[in-house]
Length: 301
Image (cartoon, rainbow, N blue to C red; front, side):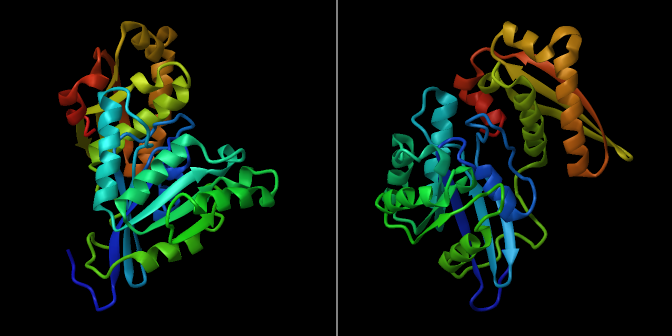
């Protein structure tokens, strides 16, 4: 950790909320590039991903956490454990909820997460996201009033992570709450997530997009090997599913679905690594992987 001048602020900011409220979109925007995968499917983020933003006199490390909810299997239990760990280890908490889903009142899921934040006793900001989806701006006012009553927030913001609305004022509020401290990561570093896990997440994102409603939560991606041969990077990856029928869905008729996943993932990975990519994808049936702790640890979950 590099020592900085007096008054330098730094710290960890846990971004928490129910599944699919826009946490990954916000972290990507705050960091300035894509580090977290985005999907319309809930529970896209499975393990905390840290993104670093450097600015004049500060370094903020945003922790994109899995969507918080009551666990139903070992995978979800571990995801919830990671959320609680992130809350306990953070200097600031950014609580997010979806304005378009709170028009009739803040739901039980949002209240559950807000209560976790309140009990953490960590300085917290509430960010009401997706305000651009409300028919009228005034529709947000009752939501703001209700959210203010959920916890002792340092501030409450109406934002759109997609459109960029109020993002910089939100960032300024976060920086004001950061304690004085060292620079945890060198300038230029935007994430400490291992390369193999980032590659696996990029492939899983495309699998979620292509498969849509069919087998999203049953899919996991593991990078078996990465070989660099001059300007060509060869990536051997395994897509794990739980049942033979799911394997057939991922493969598709004549291998068309797996080919589409590979083609779309390759484009993103080439942009990420800046080299030509050969992506070798295989599909493997791994029964009950979501309840296998050893398997989850191997995937970094």
